[in-house]
Length: 131
Image (cartoon, rainbow, N blue to C red; front, side, top):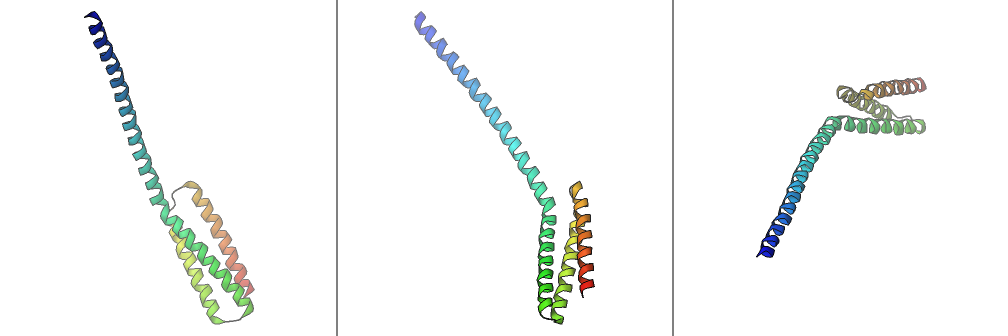
């Protein structure tokens, strides 16, 4: 009888040990899921805040590429439509540059936009001088 009692006590101790280990794993898993959800929300907020700047930068890049292509075409063929295209691209660049300035989310962005503005002003000055 003593052996049966010892076996039941041992089984209870083992079950209690497994139960505690399982409970700890559930707590750690829950804590990990909460932190993962918080991290996902934080990254979502960052992406949402920067999406406008990213899209504005892509459109500025496209506008400058369009201007460059038009300038090269202007070298080959003196056409008024090319000048209109350049003007439209310049307006597109400035519109998106303004959007980027209105959506500054990190401190370095101000300096980057100032350098970009300076470079673009130099670009347009040289183009006007070329004309």
